[in-house]
Image (cartoon, rainbow, N blue to C red):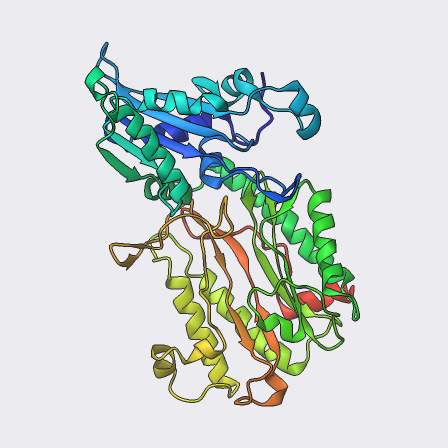
Length: 449
């Protein structure tokens, strides 16, 4: 059967193989899918697969388990990978209510799984798979229920010790190895992320065109949801932020229930999810289509900081280099505008800028909007490398009640965010089709040119 999935079965198989090849021989990996979450009574939340499980399988159904066995075959002494999936069974009566299920035969055929069992066989089969395993790997992320279940399976093996059964002696956290793999995006992943970025970029352009004073923030949010779905995305990658005026100074403002006022800026942080991969874009623009003098001055400082940060996205430079570049430009800009006083080096060293810029400049992007992967190795900022994807998002936020600054600056919140792939020679900005210079934003909003 020919697959229409954007990432091939062969790539998922290669990921599983690459994971187990990092493990000691006679290891077993156990990883659960996400579960169905109920909003109330029989109404459930829209399902979204666990990112780690999806990375290894592409399997879209809830309540499944993946087991990877990496053992030495006696015949040729060569290590062998065997994949086992436990998932919901085909059930005609249940499918009438909740939709079609993939089932075990189709899971093997379409997802390259070696053997597949129904979910109700999990507790019987896991102790058998664990018998003789020396190293057990599973996600250790504070999920006590998962740890308890794993230990119950191991205990069942121990209880058969007199029959020769041997339980795993060592348990390990799977996540550091798996998340390091997820940090580097394949060509197929990058293509999906470019598509998600372009869908999101066009939605931001549309929002600039339709924005008018007295619109409600949620009405502008609705334009994004419509554009995303019209373009093939079924979901946002995170809760959309539409903050007009003072609300733009709240970093994770999501109420989106206030009118947009003439003369204010509106900050929109919105990105779609496509095939489980996230886009993440922020633009700030004037509700009426023209920046005021103060708005324009602050906006240009943020834009200059973002451009300087993007220049630091190069293989070999450390992943915090963009932040340092942004802080340098932002602090100098705050000095030039009189919002900070003192010596530049001292203000940076004492982090005086954090009154107005209190978050980092970048985060990894991928299956999660704040994606997996360490930022430091052995206490040092890790170098950027080809295949990493990150955001660049400096901002300035002048609180509306900050009486230490002149009233004309208060209540202005600005953030500019793009998504960037680290290439062999530098940076590819995959969200570049959204205007971000003052002239280009005003031209788009006022239909000039």
